[in-house]
Image 1: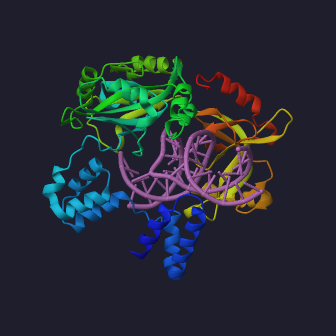
Image 2: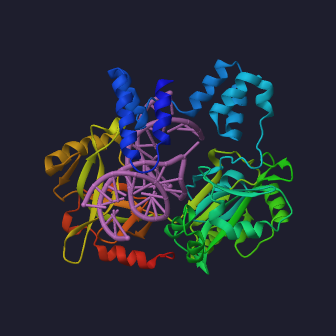
Image 3: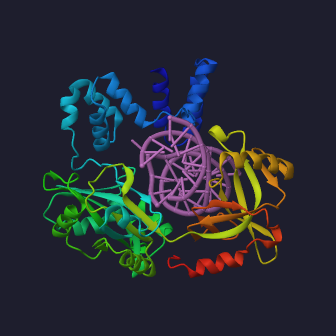
Length: 436
DNA sequence: AGTGTCTGCCCC
DNA sequence: ATTCTGC
DNA sequence: GCAGAATGGGCAGACACT
């Protein structure tokens, strides 16, 4: 209770001098705690209480504590996405109230998520007939329209004010509904994700940025219509209702879609999406229900296969949590025109724990200089780095950065003189469809 | 007033 | 976002 | 197959410092 009170005060501190105030509050709290308590408090704050206990286990705990069916708890959690509230309902109303829980208009629910497809044919192998849909590179949004219209992001941020043109066009519609879709920056053709970020969570100068970053909303699902929840009916029926309910306007479109059981047709559809500058395709099971917050094989995503570059490691850092004692975070450089090494990305993922451990020893041997938890190392280890695309960067001196970087493999066979240069990054960038 | 640094139930 | 790991 | 953990770039905003 004491700790909670302090946390509350800390989180509520705002304005000038608030950093000092927060710091003073924390010092006060730590002073009153025993060493063991202090350790736990710090780990809680830094998010390092990693004991493999997250929401799944909490659902089980609620089920046991209040003697209610686990599946009912999971279902209520899925629909409400608030474990505290679920616990309260379970305690007060038991299974009876728990089973009455349903989605409500005006209250955001979690989005259904997709998994990566192995290849373009996976959906057809799994479902027979599959729904192919363009995949749009923007921000996932959920639109609630009853008397008023509200637009929420994946983490339930309210971005209604940021998407006024969408709101205006929707207000003509006579129905009440919840829609699921993706907003992307669009002017004649799809623009870069970075551009959308400049607009989406702005608080000031909204009209100005709205002019600079025109958007489109692509709607692909409907979860609620005129008083009825639609999440338990098959996707193909939801799509039919969506098409009947929503008329396309200047800034609001239905997601491009096709149903097929032919891999070749799916492939063609994908090629078309990419050639028009879209990110790829979604492949969905026509019979699937909408499962809020679930990532599963009912929805698959397929994107262009990643590019790769050979880069050299120039710096390494200690990681966090279970990686606190290994050098797990690497900075990669490419060569510029003058032969200098310029950093273009960092990455950890792609290596197994075992490899990281071995590399830790290796990097310690070739370390040149230590800067806190960071080591500058002799540039000699060449690594193949995969990435989704190249972005213009304002932090990297080369002016370019990699999006979604990950380590593919270590090139023990290559030397520093064989790595790629900035020129190659530039060329790859110029070849991309979406540059701005 | 301008610059630097850090944070986010952030977006991907 | 991506990737690896333990169950 | 699933959940959990550890990590990427970049944006606006908030605050600190000068």
